Length: 158
Image 1 (cartoon, rainbow, N blue to C red):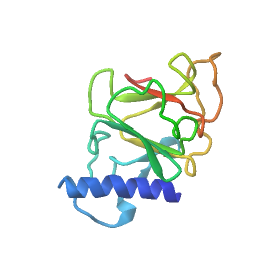
Image 2: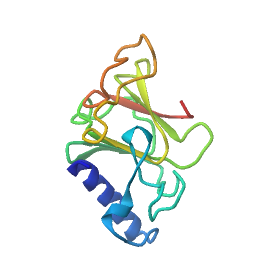
Image 3: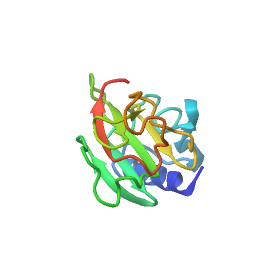
């Protein structure tokens, strides 16, 4: 697991400890590989067995080791220093009907996108092969998501 992913997980878990939502155990207990080599924070760890156990309503994007986007809403355009710089992202959305998944877009809401399920964290070092796989024929379709995302939108399962 890359340093950015470990740092991201450590930050999230530190916040959960500080808020009293989890008790610390070994660092290896904080992440469990998921299908497609994603990292699921909520399954098989101290947060609980649900993708929503670590939910705080946020979508977080890192550029290198720095948080460049931390939002509870849609992001029609990533801020400078974040657009096309993403190296790690995580969906900590609350359970809701049609609004707990993230569509990570290549450019704007009319371009190709990648779906981020609730409770998932993806990092460039651990999942280098992720591509924008939704929106066939649209700009960015088939391109790597790494250092190519420019907007995000909450949605239902996709």
